[in-house]
Structures are given as structure tokens and as C-alpha cells.
Image (cartoon, rainbow, N blue to C red; front, side, top):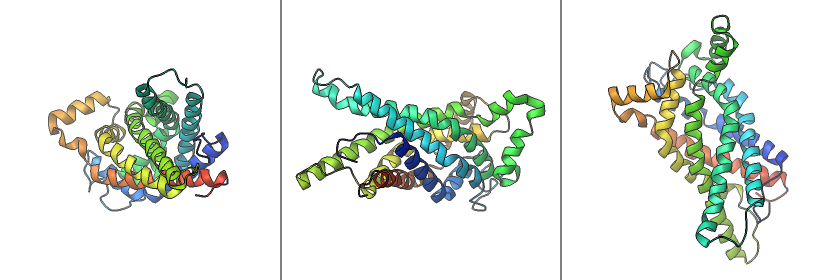
Length: 294
């Protein structure tokens, strides 16, 4: 990849995204399980404690590659389209300084909506298995949902698989609006630093540098969006379908603000490490597929 910051081709983004998603989910699955159990209304130890921390990993494997591939194909595609239509020379320096971050925010938001089409059903199944429901397995959790077909019909099963869609999008969009512009800004700073040091174009950042920037941006975004993550987990694990507002008011009324930061430590650790693995492996795959050094 050159220093022009042109987005990678569709096929490259598709394959690199799939590799990155699978790598990060398998590497950090135990931390995700502990975070889910800390946020469960049943409590940490009743939900499984430190036992069976790979429960539900099957659903994560199934959803990782397509979810991440959907995200990066949409993200890189939208980012490229917006950049190509950007007017030049007719705006103030202040507007120009914010134009690229705004494009990254819009591209990341649309990418997350696309990814959630795959991510939400697998997340529902995964978190129920992690919390020890339905025998603590992905197959058991999925079977329990599908077995309701006779009572609630196709539409009901569909709604159950996509339970928490709204709060997931509400969590993921703010997360990416923070993480990806910050990651892109840090990468831009890295490119400029490299250009100054080498006196030439310098090329794009390597996988290790991208991993460092991904870790920092992920940690910042994770801490800020933890309350939304708690709401998402409570909605997905509730025995009956509940509205986000109902869960929110119940938590505030009966427990105050403290539960909204349950699992913040594992979440920041998980996503900080995940940001390094996810965006580092993505950069490595892009550089390798395009024939550049990582």
C-alpha cells in the first residue's frame, strides 16, 4: 500500500477482514466470556464463574469471518467513495481538518450496521452459551431458539435471533465513531513521521505500528461505551424480551449507576488487546496481499 492512503480493493478488504475477525475472536474469547458473566443479571459465579470459558466458541467462529469481512468491505468502500467526492481548495482549513475524520465516522458507522446483520444472531447464541444457559453450548442455545418455531412462528424466531439488534447498533456505532477516526489519525501521524524520517513517501504503516494504534484507540472507545455494552448484555440474556428503556430504568432505579460499569476492566483489556490483534492482523493481511512489507 502506498502512502496515498487509497483504500484496498474489495477482495483484499474481504479476505483481510475475515482473517482479522477470526484471529481476534479466537485469541481473546476467554476474556469475552468473563466480561459477559460479570454483566449477567444472574451474577458471575451462577453464570459459570471461571469454568468453561470457551463455551459458545462455535458461534463465534461461525460469525467472526463474515462479520469482520462485511465491516471492512463496507468501511473501505464508503471511505473511498467519500474521499473521491471530496471538494478541494474551496473550504477553510478548519473544515478540511475535520473532513477526513467525519468521513471515517460515516464509513465506520455504515460498516458496523452491515456487520451487525451477521454479528447479532451469533452474539445472542454465544452469550447465552457463555452464561451457562441451555447446557452452555452454542448448539443448545441455537436449538432452544429454533424450538420456539411452533409457538411463535418464523417472525418470532427471527426476532429472537435478532434480540438486542437496536442496542447492539447503539453500542457499536459510537464505539467505531471513536475508535476508527482515532486509529486513522494515529496512522496518519505515523505516515508523516515516517516521511520526515526517510525523506521520501515512506509507504503505509506496518502491522506492528497499526496494532499499537489499534490497541490505544480500542481501549479509549471501550471505556467510554461500557454502559451501552452492559445494556446490550442484559437485553440479550433476559428470559423474556424486554425493551432497552425498561432495562435502563430498572438498573437505575434498583442499583444506581454502578452496574453500568460492570466488566469495564475485562472489557478494556479485551478490546485493547483485541484492537491490537484485529487492526494489526488486518494491516498485515492487507500489506501481504498487496505485496508490501508488513
